[in-house]
Image 1: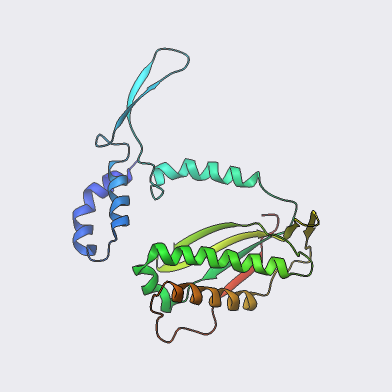
Image 2: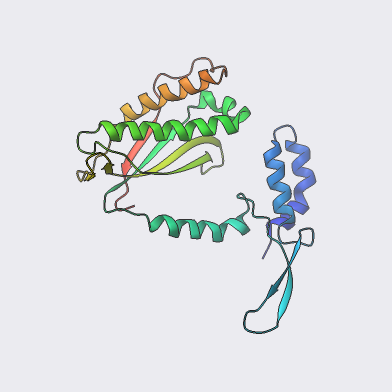
Length: 225
């Protein structure tokens, strides 16, 4: 099996020469973490069998969230924890996409813009749930940020998995919708756009020229989650 660390060792110099001007410090940190992961360059730990005296000296894993060796097991555990939180309701996948005109701004201010995207997407869903005639309560959701498309193009977007259910804390009621419809995607996009523009302006970042009036939000049923 070819380890990622061996690939980095082989192509690191060529990669840095070609992309040095585009790489962020966070990318270099991830690269070096994965390069040392479970190799002789990392710290060592002693592992002992609980049934006998047999023990081994093994290199530490890096634990970086971008490392496939470390995150495969962590991702599976995370998924199992989320499945235990499922509620008896129809689930919807909402996708909030940042327009291409904002991608350069997002690339230069990743921590800020990504935070805005998740916050504004969640605030939009929360507002719609509170104002919905059938739900009228507090929503729940799982949010995941994707920075690239499946073709590995830079394409920041946020996925929210949302149950068609809400809790009315004041009246202590649990409400659900079962008609295969959650919210109007155009209305979601309009509110998300307004919240993002306000957040960017409040941060005193320059808005790009000729950004679109209509943004894209997708909302579709995914069954039981």
